[in-house]
Length: 269
Image (cartoon, rainbow, N blue to C red; front, side, top):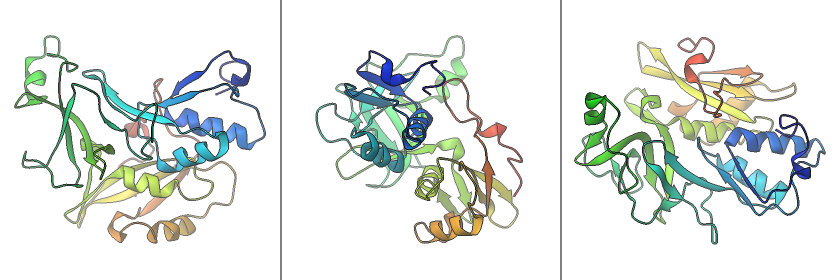
């Protein structure tokens, strides 16, 4: 990141930094390489556009002494939820709904999801847009009883904060079990050396879908069997990747959003 802006961030006159998770990983890489990349006077780091893993949150806090403030929003809704600026920030959550914004978690039948269980995140409030321009059918399918269907999967934690589990379209169903990619990604990121990860479902005749992972791990020496053994102790066996592909980088757009459809051999183990 510091190289991309042409000069070290530490030389910039700024007190607030807004970035996507990959930017924070890059800052950590530079810091671990001994480079001064952030100014001492920085007071706030904000993350959005994609879920921030608990691993990145804790590593950044340990290295820079700051807890990243994660929040959640969409083009159709503006800001929806945020962690507190002054107060505890929920690691692995995007915080609570903003004043005037209502959030509900809905199961596959359209009812309220059981406490702590994932479902579709739906939003209602003055922040929500009215309609898509000249797309009445898309507008109609995007609302349920006046609630906007975000297409994101999530749940409430014990404090009422929202935890993002991933996009509904990215949900993997294997042998009748729901697998939320973000849980597998978070597990992979706890393995030393892995800095980025993506998880997809690959069609399988017997189980419907199987899990395939793509990881970025600078340097040499990472072994697929060792990574799988690490994950086996942390997540259920049906959630384990059946294959792990090591890559130099993951395909992302200009906003830092992962482009799953550009992953190589996306539908093959």
